[in-house]
Image (cartoon, rainbow, N blue to C red; front, side, top):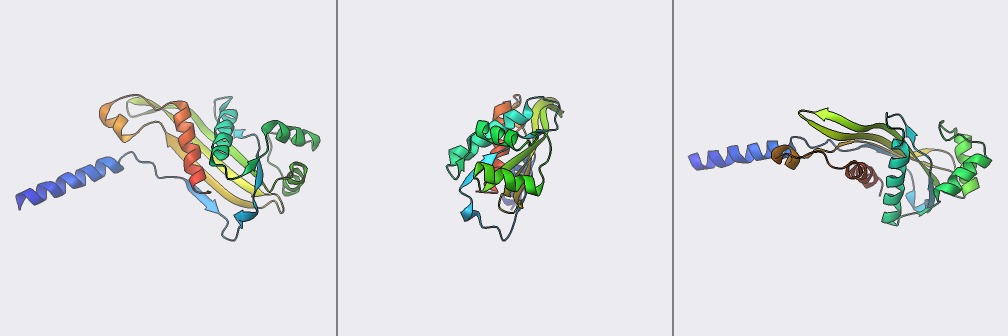
Length: 190
């Protein structure tokens, strides 16, 4: 009898340890009546950057685009073509686009959807006694026929893990945390 209670206590402790430090996962929205089968070509717009790191938007946009291309789910417009089209339409890269501007840009690029991103946190923070990379990004997709939001996902990720907490070690690399952030978001879409 004592043997069973020790096993139950050990199991409970292990469950607590394994769930301690786990992130809650992405917060996401997918339009319930959206038909994603029509989305075959898309573009990624420059990400907005609200963090202290001047290059965070560009870094996250690069990781995001590479991850979408890796999935081979959509035909993607290259960034140069996207920026040129924005220039022709006199659209700023640092302001939110109106519904009409989204529709016009979609026609100009001949895309079915546009991806947006906003980097809210990007850098090192102190967690307990460790310094770890922390990233928070909101990703969105808007279809270009009507300019309607059809998907959004916000992810908060850090470079710590259960194993790092138990056995020591610094943060995961900035790239690994960035990649994990993007992958978590895209799993809610694809």
